Structures are given as C-alpha cells and as structure tokens.
Length: 370
Ligand SMILES: Cc1ncc(COP(=O)(O)O)c(C=O)c1O
Image (cartoon, rainbow, N blue to C red; front, side, top):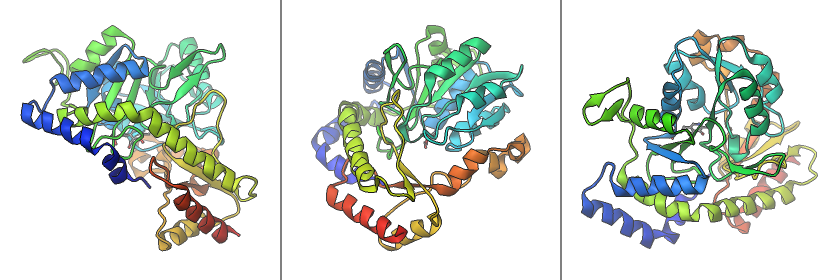
C-alpha cells in the first residue's frame, strides 16, 4: 500500500546524517531535536503549541485526560474510523456515542452529531478520515452552541487545508480545542517507528497536555496530576524534521496519483471515486472507492492473487466491535456506516507510485469488475 523504502532512498543522505547526529549526541530522549521538530510543526500547522508524544493513540488519550473528562461523560465520534479514536475514550471509562458519517466524505455527519447531544455530552471527536477534512465549520459552530470541546483526530489528515465560508483557511488539527496526529510510518508524515503529536492554541491546555505526557510532572519529580509516559524519541524527531520539509510535495504526489485513478475510473457505474468537498484540500492518506453491485471481498482477494495490495479500512465499524459491547456499542443503528463498511476498498496510494503501476492496478480492477 505504501513504498517507504524508495521514499527513504530519495532522502537517504539527509536522514542518515540526522540519525548519526543523534547517535553521536547520545541525546536520545528529549533535547534539541525534539524541540526543533515541535517548533517546525507548530509553524507548519499554524498552531501555537505542539506537544510531541509516543503515538497517535496516546495523543488522543492525553487530550481526553487534559480536558478533565470524567467516567460516564459522553464523547460523540463516528463509528466509521480506526479503533484508536474510540478505544482511548473507553480506556478512560468515557461513554462513546457513535454517529453516522456523510456517505460522500466518510466524515462525521454534523446533523447526526447535533441530534446525539445530551446533557452528558462533553466532547466531540471528528476524524479527518482518509485525509479528507470533516466539516469543521459546522462542527465548531455546534460545539460553541452547546459548550463542548472538540478534539480533532488528524492522524490521517496532516497537511489538509480546511476553507471556511468566509475564505479563511486553516490546517486540520489546528481548528478544534485540541488536535491529535500520528507519525506511524505509513502516514502522510511518517516516522521510522512510532510517533505522535498534540496541537492546541490554548496555553493553559498546552501546559496540561505537556504535564500529562510526562508523568503528570510540573517540574522534575513533582507530579501534580495523574499522567502517563509518552515521548517522541530524538531519532524519530530528527527524521520527522527532515520529512516535514517534504510533506507538501508528498501530498502533491498523492493528489497526482488520486487524479490518475479518478480519471481512470470516471463514469464507471460500479465505482464511486472519492468525493472532494470544496472546503477540504484532500491529502489522500487513503484512496478509497465505493463499489456498487460488486463482490468487494472477491475483488480484494483477486487483487492479492495478482500481487496487488488493497485494503478494507475498516472491515468492522467501531460500534460492532466486541470491545464496545460493554459500552452499548451494539445498540447503535448506523445504516450508512454499515453500508460503507460493506462497500469500501482502498487502493495503493503513496509518493512513489508511477503511472505504469497505476495503469496495472486500474486494468486489473476494471477487468475483474467488467
Ligand atoms: C484515524 C486514526 N486515529 C488514530 C490513530 C492512532 O495512531 P497510532 O497508530 O500512531 O497510535 C490512527 C493510526 O493508526 C488513525 O488512523
């Protein structure tokens, strides 16, 4: 699905030098490489504060802890997302309230969101799924009216520009009260190991997030709140500092590959190509088709037999995962989510795809479907 090896080979010199610099410095945890990366990412995302952490799942958990959410508090989130979005809420004994997604954007349906609000609702967790922005203007408006926190799950959306109706453009992850992202190697900004970051523009919240990520400590060996241990290591920070400089080019390459697929599948009655809402600059973390009147799983297996990877993100929506039975997950009725779950298939999309590879992928898909 991705080609991190060839991507690395193009920047090998810079990366190798940066890694060796960390090894020679022996400053493996914290230090100037981590500070530099946090500062660069804050500028890139136009966020006042960036708190690096160990992975995107931790970022979400720390965000929920920093907002002081208490057991039983409700958080509203799509079910059509990666488990990490909601697992963190369950871990803190919060109550996940699952809502539908828009069948075109795959992101939280704002109307469904408003209907799901109760006196126990404390936070909304929209997900910029596959690299397409959730409708943040509507979501922030609802949050303001009901006095709710917004934590953006930007693990798949880093670099995505959201355009408000007045023309203001903001990066996803920098719009809600807190934004969270992941540097899992296959992400648009991928490390060579695990990594994550938390964004906020609120100084008090930034202090709290930083403290929680570092054992709740306000200064060394003084622990004011219950925290955890979540650090981005210096080797990953050094790698990410270099890769961040290439992020916009990486996104452009993904968008080019998406354009190719779009053209190749245009007008095909059995294939719906990814929708691009005017407010979202799609960064194509995934290129995901909706298949109509087609045996999706058979196509998935056929492509595998031809040596072509394809993935189902995700085969079971969160509300149907056993994990959430204890939270009443199976009591939610989400027909749009179920409908999508049965029909989506994601194709290889990355910075190293060439037209020859894409032509082969397209021809195999079309020959199967026809
Ligand atoms: C939507 C979403 N949220 C959260 C995460 C969790 O990130 P990580 O794997 O870095 O913990 C991921 C990545 O896998 C993701 O895709």
